[in-house]
Length: 118
Image 1 (cartoon, rainbow, N blue to C red):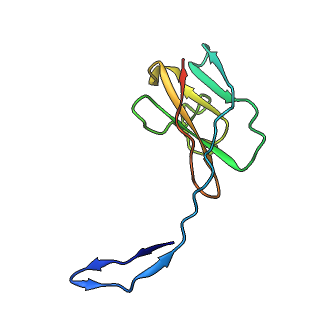
Image 2 (tube, rainbow, N blue to C red; image 1 turned 90 degrees about the horizontal axis):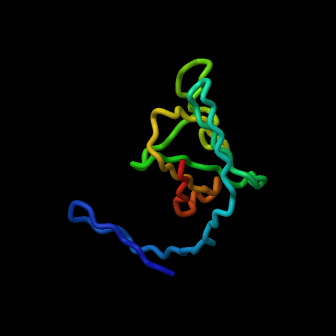
């Protein structure tokens, strides 16, 4: 049990007891498949063995910026489905490394970033 209180503008809140639960570490064990489509200039990254619907995935570039799906037919970024186990990205907009994190949908806890070399 921890106790917390707040101080703001010379006022102090009542001290309250809180319970903290340490959640289990999220392990990333999925394998990555990389397919390059030279015709439309895209790369499709897919994670294998992602049957557990409890998790979503966050794809990041080398600078840590979030990556989103690219639709080559519409030639634009599509935000829907960007947290799934498969993502389509433009080949020209990337460096040689991207990252993926596994995120628990309920607790929002995430795994460490996993490096994917292109």
